[in-house]
Length: 232
Ligand code: 9D3
Image 1 (cartoon, rainbow, N blue to C red):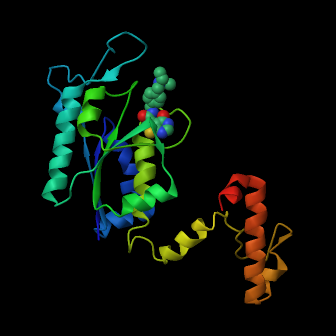
Image 2: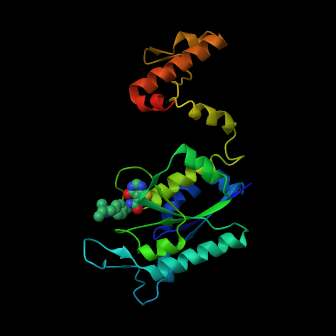
Image 3: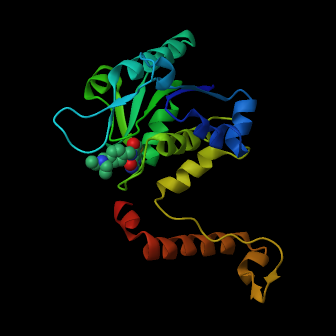
């Protein structure tokens, strides 16, 4: 299993943040996931390489014009088809549904997607009607574009691809399904600046350790995310 991601973006260099670092970089090196970017600017029609224009009807800011976007998206979809993937196009937008763990599980079942990152005030609606099959948001706060949400999405999906992480992720699915936050972690030294590791973790009593961790998870969830317990 390997994941094919094509990203349409005016800022392709930003994606080095995931392809050049850490677990995601290793996944690329192992051939477990590949990422290609397509810049609408390279498909601009005029001498100024223009990709934006003023919105019809007035209003602040600029809108991404349809022609270069459509051309970049078609190139991205063509690569997906060449790889034998039925293209599935996601527009990252504050108007989309917020990305959740459940949605990530749905997405990781797909062999690939095309991600469209908007800039300026947004994208000409006609391109979205023609191409976008899904609209996803990173949450209810305002960013300057879709690139960081796209990278968040790629990051959290790629770590679920078998072989990307060394440990067994299926166990991890279950803990998230419990709707509980994680328990606190400690490592050496046993005493750091006068602060000691909880005795129970040094006791070697596995059942007590498990009980303590579960209690800590519940306490943290009650304190920081009580709404998770209502869902459970
Ligand atoms: C006139 C209102 N516009 C500015 C406040 C709307 C607007 C346009 C473009 C707001 C944000 C953006 C750029 N954001 C994204 O492209 C984006 C985003 C986000 O801002 N928050 C959470 N998830 C996402 S996914 C894409």
